[in-house]
Image (cartoon, rainbow, N blue to C red; front, side, top):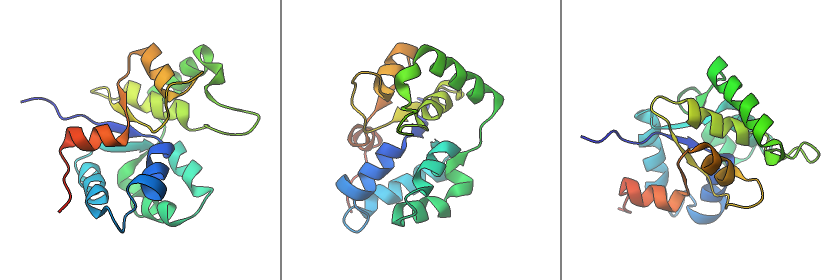
Amino acid sequence: MAVKPIYSVDSSALIHAWRRAYRPQNFAFVWKGFDALIAEGRLRASMEVYLELEKKDDELFAWCKERKETLFVELDDAVQASVTNIMKNHPRLVDTVKGRSAADPFVIALAETGKPQMIVLTEEKPGKVRIPDVCNARNIKWKNLADMIEDEDWKSG
């Protein structure tokens, strides 16, 4: 039996799902799917994602806050070392001037240090130096939500 994938989710994926593509009032099955993945320990997020979402303090953050203990992962030495290496090799990943994308290296590092290695969930597209570009350079799988939903075979009621 194949090992089921574990995902490291980026803020962009959660924001995209909540505000644009899979609004909870119309796509409850997606949010039930997220909860099932969280319960199975297969959907994880860096605490840095939580801190990024906390800045908005909206309904999405309220949803995350209810799942803080089960969805979000505190930094450990392996993740910290991976973040240091990512930033050394991809310094433009984080926009330090505008304070954007601060969680991105943590999302990637969580995936990279996972046992087994996780798949990064992001709505970012490959570009100059974005999550997909760094994942590709480091041989880490990534996908968007629509592909994950299809792979997990989620269907509306």
